[in-house]
Length: 64
Image (tube, rainbow, N blue to C red; front, side, top):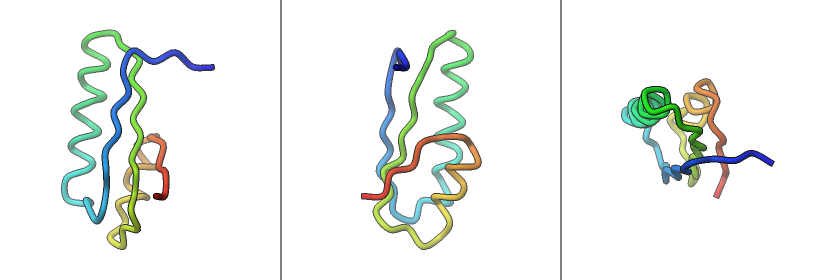
């Protein structure tokens, strides 16, 4: 089982324009502060490729 210092859950519905920046900011904080952060994107049926962008950044995508 993984231990995380924090978990971030982002709701997502066609967020291709903004979701990458949000994930990158969390990863930057994680690195700068030597944390172990879990990032989960809860996708509600996006049709703009948001899910693929998130998976490319190695975050967990859950279909809700």
